[in-house]
Amino acid sequence: MNDALKQPAALFQFSNQRLQYQGRTVLDNLSLSIASGERVALIGESGAGKSTLLKALREQRPDQVAWCPQQPGLVPILSTFHNIYMGALSSHSLAYNLVNLIKPLPRALNIVEPIAKQLGLKQHLFSSTDKLSGGQRQRTSIGRALIQQRPIFLGDEPVANVDEYQGDALLQLICQQHQTVVLALHDIAQSLSICTRIIGLQDGAIVIDAPSDQLQASDLAGLYGAS
View 1 (cartoon, one colour):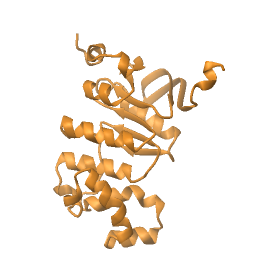
View 2 (cartoon, one colour):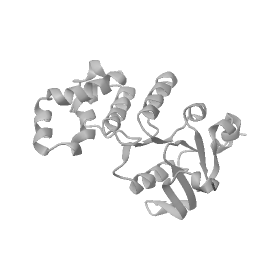
View 3 (cartoon, helix red, strand yellow):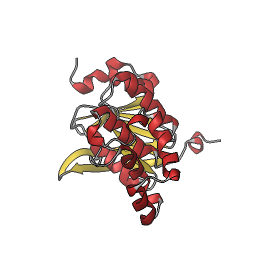
View 4 (tube, helix red, strand yellow):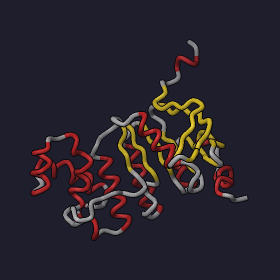
């Protein structure tokens, strides 16, 4: 059988495309394919185009993507429960959502509580998110993505506000619960250990695209101006 026939179909595809942010070209002549089942790390300096690329990926598969942005966008006066539950609003009627806003129903609690427990947030379930630490708010944002139960997870620095040990555990959890994962990460070691493919961005282009097991940290240091 022809080897090409064995390749999985592209989940995301760009062919010589230009991606812009606020009218400025960020990535030019972008050609890229990502298949179902891949765990991809996007790395590079701030402004290299990671967030712009994630946004473009999201636009290609909006109904299949669980989105975890760099800025959580939580509602401060609402509880951790409500902020996680917000990820599931589109799955329920307006009336059901309004009832849960007033008093969480058992069915909703049975869905949200296990997620909160996995994220170490169960004891803060009914605390307003303005009372949480930065790391706890970030975990709440991850919970809001997990509750959507979608096959693709796109995360923009989803563990930047937690320590390395917690970050590794959270990323493993994300990978376990999604078929395909694309993450903008700043930690090179974490990228190599968690993801199966590394895409390095620099000067408006992809300069590295390789399996993580074929790379070392020294291969990626130059993306951050290191010698």
